[in-house]
Image (cartoon, rainbow, N blue to C red; front, top):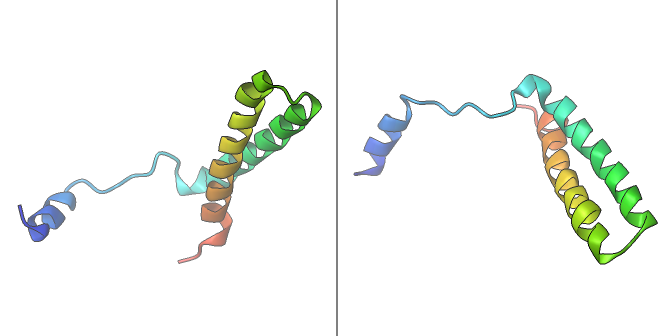
Length: 77
């Protein structure tokens, strides 16, 4: 299958993001707020168990929240 055939076949099913553009700010802000709260809880008790329960979710929430906020307010086309 050539690249041109793949391009034509892909035009029949356009990509729709899981989070619409109108709600990216709310999702990003919520994730950043959750990351802030989880980071504070992790700072109160830094044990091995709290890494799995607070640290990893906080870092994931911060990463995804930052990307959503950049997409919501930082990219203008």
